[in-house]
Image (cartoon, rainbow, N blue to C red):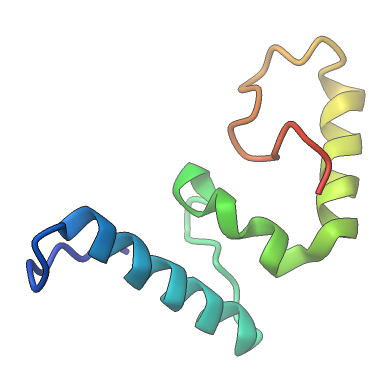
Length: 83
């Protein structure tokens, strides 16, 4: 979802606030932030909001087991620091 409506001088900041509010509302309604391509890097900041700390820890554990050297898209979807 992108919206650069130009109602404010800083359209990128406006877009960020709209995206934050929309993703929070989506998760609060019990819906998912995923898209037909999965979560994707654009929605990754909201992943923890949707699946919680435990979900992020589980995904991090799977990633570490499958990619022990951390060379496959490091930090792209799962934050590199613990929630």
